[in-house]
Length: 218
View 1: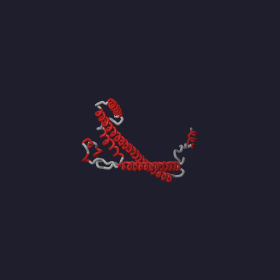
View 2: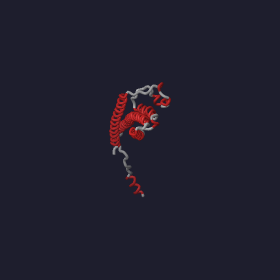
View 3: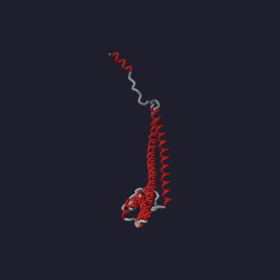
View 4: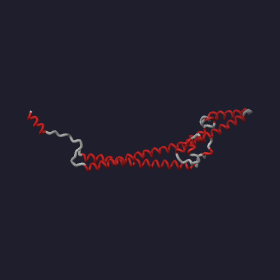
């Protein structure tokens, strides 16, 4: 095969691949921008703001991100992760000795049964049982609200991560596309500077006349 033909083929192929990577980069950039704007819009609608630095409790002040975002509105995925884990998560641990909404379901159901039995038996312990039931119901309601908000914020954070990854993929695609384009252009320049009759990896031709003379002399 002629060297010029080979250079042209590789160069054209490189340019085609560069175009594909360019398209991929544009698509991933569009997806990343959508993820960013969508997360920002959804979080902004909640109108959540971090506590100011002077109002943080000692436990809250131990969180580096709560100090970092102090007083700021919650609008990004990283902020959502911080608020969900370091603020809501911290306060959920102080409710019902760290038990979850699901874990309080069994004792709440048991107290309801005890209250019903005490009412039927006219048990003097009824007021105390009712208070326990009221307290655990309030705790479970608080846990449900907190865990739901925490889950929604972490979902927003997870969605924002896809945007970040898409941005990284786009950056790599643009860089590789640029390198391929430069190499392909260099290949085309080399192709047209190469003589038309120059071949690539041509087989070596032996000097048959020389071999014949050698045979005759022998």
